[in-house]
Image (cartoon, rainbow, N blue to C red; front, side):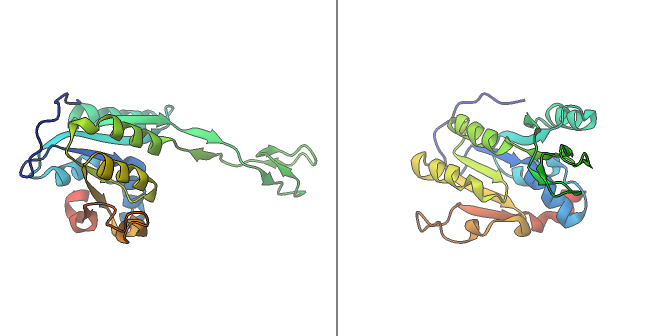
Length: 209
């Protein structure tokens, strides 16, 4: 359940911290690196140790017809007090060449040769936008934020929070899924993009227990 605490006076010794988790990013990293899903609650336990955590937010696309996935998201909130934000998967169809006559069509039956080109539609996710909007909406509750992702698309958001709003931003990611933009100096400021990087590779045992 989300806490409603207002932001107290900043303290370097005991800052108020919120965690924002890019669920899709951490899911892909776990499967690619270890061949299994990483329980978000294990991740939160690692990042919360000895820290004053105000709220934790988890963002993921959701197939509303997938009852198992829906229950998983519900349990994160009920059992582990993680605030879950979801967006339904949005399907988009791309132009392809018919496998039979090479005519450009949408997936399905070709109107020229009637060959049935059955493809699974691509999925388009809006969850990154939802995470960014929520992080800005909740910025008055935290002095520091831990952003769990390796996606460089969040760099403009991080710049705004750091340089316009005075927030300290930490990034948690696996080395293999960490965009080089976070390692190299920011092309606009010449400084580090984030205040610190937490490499999750160092916590494999705790993540997978």
